[in-house]
Length: 530
Image 1 (cartoon, helix red, strand yellow):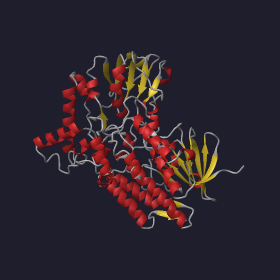
Image 2 (cartoon, helix red, strand yellow):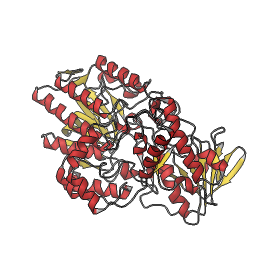
Image 3 (cartoon, helix red, strand yellow):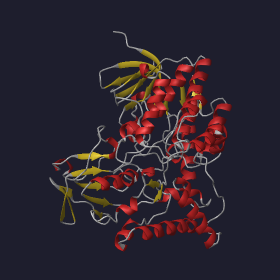
Image 4 (cartoon, helix red, strand yellow):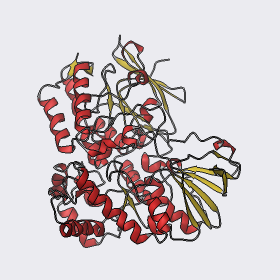
């Protein structure tokens, strides 16, 4: 039986996979997309936990490749909720008739490069085997759920939920007692909502996290018209910013400002809300003393909000602000003023075990009806390493990355010809507005495939030398900032045994874009094309 053949196989039907399919079609390439879920949306298909919403403003967290799409879609809130983002994803899939080339509820299990034919054989959990010249991964940076290895986890008799894989029908905690493990972004968003329903909520915190109020609000028609009239200008301004987000950035030094100037700037940012808080001063991630001024400001806000001084102290982060992803919340700290909400510090002594009725910590048993794991993801590499990729000589990707991920530009991997990774490790990805970063990668890959075809070539592959040079550059740039100084998922610290490597490129989107363009201008410098 002849195997189906495609120019490209795309893995994942989130925002990256959908746009990649659209671009491949535009350039005349045949493609098949494989998606584990029943629908499109990727991260926003799976992450349906209470309070889930984007931490980038909705008018910017959107595609820009088609101005008609920008003009016709109508966002309702400043920070869009998961349901609204998923509606947007489905609108895009319908608008460009993408579903006919997507195989849903199908997981890619293995992809093997054949050096004799210069093709990939892709296998799925449904027993399919297809052949493709190119394989493009679009599985997202935060899609491999991290389930903690806590003794007795399977012993709990009540329902156990993970924020990264929430029941699609939703969960009603009314009248229930709930235990939440974790205080990262998904916990900070979900805890206030769970607390509104539950009759009892106990939060188990290992590390306190910084969070800035979203100050979310409905978008007025006047505001939306103004943005849509200047979408091109807004996108251009964003491309010049490190995070690819159009925001007001103050290049001044925090430590050189007066106390009054600092307070004014921080208060203005706090009132505005969200991630732009880190743009209050230009050296917050470069200078310890400057960063401490922002730390002190946020801790002051916690003390002002949380009534119990001991709880306020536990909720006050001790690390550098911004070295972990800054969270955006709605009423998080105030939730701990509610009499039915308790905070348990597990930083010094970890949870002993999960029991049939709850969990045990420091010899004390906590009892609850439902357990919520807000324990995040095996970020950036987890999804890639779940698939058995085999490159030249049958070498497995997991072996090549045993000491940490190595890529060229976060786009390709030496020894794995014709394999592309959208927002892979070594790209700005999670340090930026993901939608525009995805678009830049998709467009670069599509142009690259077209260039290979126009040369009459069959193979494009990053050289070892180019890859090593990029890996060293990513590492050296990371070392210049405070972001690499703490244990975060940026370095894989949340996964036991994972190599400690700062995975995203911290040099900023403009510098990265310039490098990608230079590679193309110089005839795909750093690549072997055969």
